[in-house]
Image (tube, rainbow, N blue to C red; front, side, top):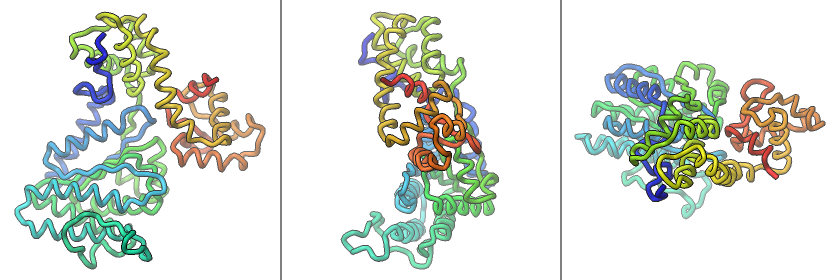
Amino acid sequence: MDPIRNPFAPGAGQRPPELAGRERELKAFEVVLERVARGRPERSLVLTGLRGVGKTVLLGELRSMAVRHRWGAGKIEARPEAELRRPLSAALHRAIRDLAVRHRAPDRVEEVLGVLKAFALKANKPDAKLRDRWQPGIDVPAAQGRADSGDIEIDLVELFTDVAELAADVGTGVALLIDEIQDLQPDDVSALCAACHELSQSGAPLVVVGAGLPHVPAVLSASKSYSERLFRYSRIDRLSREDADYAVMAPIEREDAGIEPEALDALFDASGGYPYFIQAYGKAAWDAAPADPITVKDVQVAAPEAESELAVGFFGSRYERATPAEREYLLAMAELTQGRDEAAGTADVAVYLGRKPSSLSPARDSLMKKGLVYSAERGQIAFTVPHFGHYLLGRD
């Protein structure tokens, strides 16, 4: 069929596959927005799941929902080895600008912007030369004595409090969305938990919505023992068969085309119900189909093309980041699980490689920092990427 009309191409369609079957999360966030706007306490939210389940797309939709409710909203992506202060400043600057258009007291807005600027400037090292000092682009003087102590935990509590009060002035709230939250540095995780604790105590209208890998609850709990009371965790998983079929059929039907039931069976078997794979196989099947409707033969013809693209862009890009020692560890995991999406025992990996467990710790820890594996539970290790073991076993 016409590739120009392909509804599975990136950016095409009105509702990507990643949002199919996510009604529960969307409705729950709707309730959060309403409760916070009415001054009622509500926990912040953390979405957890493997890569490819659509967490980032869902996070973007939650941000859009906040904006539609006239909230201030800012979104960042945490990065390993990068401090939180600078990207957080940019995100909250965006949120304050959202609020400023409806605030009747420009002086009040400038006051909060001054606090934000003071917070942001602490991202510069004390000994940095003037030409190397980062400027946050906030056109007001920096405040003094507020959110500028240099202690991220103290400063973040004060900053969140002031921004939340600004939102309360206009009867709304602020949503701060953080993707890849597991990549935050330990001090920043601790500060974020402390700030969320303060917000929950005061009922301030600011919520944090994080998204990350399955071990995020353990990361937060290790930082602050009370974190489990601060966040409502929502596990984002592969789609059910019904939702997966909808994710395929809805965009096809919007193009006044169809797909045979046997082709839906084949697409589900190939994708495993993971939204990212549904989009990849769906796109390839559309391009391979010579006529309407899409048939099982079209899916079979398209599968190698989809797998080739995934091997390069989804699997290969991650595999290339691993060192030889780390690749050895990954392959051992794949062999032990026979390519299934299951956890392997760390002791079993050591036995398989004929090595002492302690000698493998550096490779395992590095893989965890790179986001390629995670510890499902003590003594267990699993891939963060679905079908990664199958990909490794299929490499030449």
